[in-house]
Image 1 (spheres, rainbow, N blue to C red):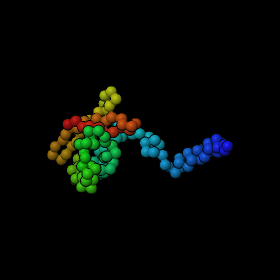
Image 2 (image 1 turned 180 degrees about the vertical axis):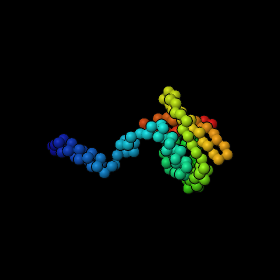
Image 3 (image 1 turned 90 degrees about the vertical axis):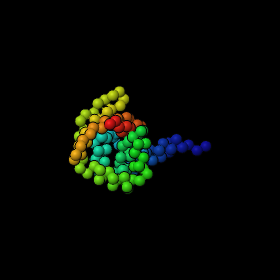
Image 4 (image 1 turned 30 degrees about the vertical axis):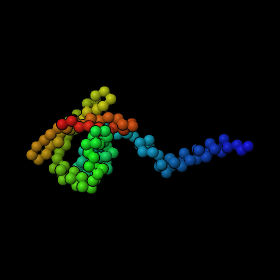
Length: 135
């Protein structure tokens, strides 16, 4: 009979130290989650920069379904976003708690017009995501 208890636990400790040292920790486990305000700020910056991969990481639910073109044609949609939001100034007017969700009221000032969109944020797997928008 071979005893592996002590060696096995030493090996497990070594493997854990190795994983931690090379950064093989699953996404979301090692990083701090963003606040709803940070998610909205990053989302707005990603619109201006046309960063479709970042936008996909920040949305979920009906918001992801509404924006399927982010996955279907990311390069084309990236260029569209850069052009569309080039001269837009955005202001997060307020973020309001609503039970387990948050509502972020954002003003979009275009050169000839302005509009207000309310983003609904929900925690998904411990991370705040924009899950819907209300015009």
